[in-house]
Image (cartoon, rainbow, N blue to C red):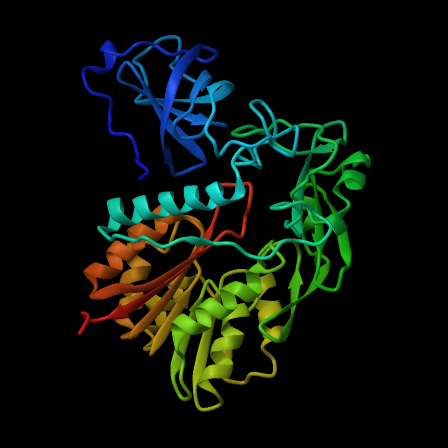
Length: 423
């Protein structure tokens, strides 16, 4: 069971000070949301990266108490030496997955089955704590990438930072510094990340590397924001759920090669769309879920596809051109729902990491939909919104979680909510 730490007991000024750089020996407890585990020292809470539950480690405080003023409720730390290791600890495949190293991978030191158990524990704790729901499921693995090691090589979209000298690299955790790493083991083999990292990029703010399902690689230097206006980024061709999709730029598509197909199948199964029904696809991106919904509701049904990005809307219109029942709206979701007050038989929503929020949940409930399918990448945001849906008469009827981001604490969840109480 995971936990979010309560405020330390006792008066804050009685807690020992833990300044940045302090080294302390601690016994690591449960995992917590965000890729770290919780340790306690004399009433203080430490969020420790690079550690595992049950380990005794020497932790160096990375974000501690200020020199002056009261002690913080919690501090952040890195495990710099393992004094007693967990049986789930493995050697990280990348030398940069360490304290002071790259911030992209926070679970490389954890065996892959234990990574999925870690994520399941976090999801279960968030659902219990924030929504009062007991979930005992598992996080499902997806396919491995040919030519890469286990859990590696799955990132088909990579954004590299570029420093003032034109050198590409990656960021440390909670930092805008640029590390001159020689390679990224999470990058798809066809991305040739080592080659891109070794190339000078003078005048660029970043570099976007994309590998599509046709095996084509796109490498785009990202100039200053003002210079990008009016420029249309490169297009990638993706295949999922028996259809072809065009995706412009590095966004609006899942990064794992098997993610789009897995999520599209889970959404279709949870939606249970029937001919003639009306559906809403909110935060729709380039139309991945809308395509399946439109095929299921048929010519006598309708799917309103709502997306705020003009670039994604243009792609969605192209991707759904053969499905006349799918109507694309360029709009913020909250604006669309408040302006048009649509009715629907079912709603699919894939909100950003912060979640949909109470206002959007209320508006979705007001559509009268009997089924809601919620795609989430953040367990806490999902749990908060599920709790709000419960207040509107919806119960959680099904949930599947997927390990689409191995070596990191991230996961993807498809939740099915239905109106009314169980019979």
